[in-house]
Length: 235
Image (cartoon, rainbow, N blue to C red):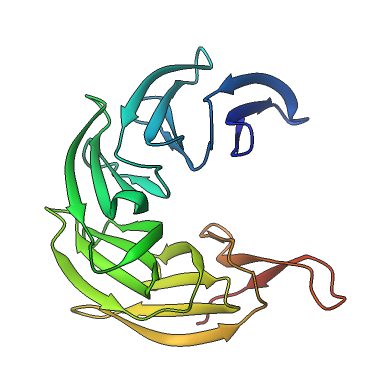
């Protein structure tokens, strides 16, 4: 089953099978956004509206709950080793900690010195949360245990996606400013090892570990058609 969130009308549409046949449509009300699947509890979580994660039961294909947060949730990640979900809530200038079993917010980590925290990734090896801010641009690193700040590193601007390459101990950040930043983990922090030019607006990306490739969506510009750029990490 393919779940597609639609910010414009607040719906989540479901498509099934190899032919992607249209199936159910779940109405959330407004601004349906990021989607995460939790295999451990057999639930689908979707950020939406003025401040909530919708809880979807894939067996009935219906909403069975809401987890309220203080403002619209942007990127969020499920920790498979605990019951926690970490949620970027830029409108509340913080990171919310949610318990996916009780479906309640259990903590909040303020980030008053920075804003527009959109992308997020979890480093399971180091037990760290990586967050990209846009105002000002930077990579924030936090401990999963209590949200203690560990490091802040400057990044390219208007970032929208962030991925961890566990095989190489690297981080990939795609930015609408027209760059792809590559960071490498060291003992205490992360060091930028490359800034690769892309095109303006190319901020959506996907790292596919099974392919060992980073895919970047490049907008049409200056007579060039829209395209998917494929990067092969080296070595």
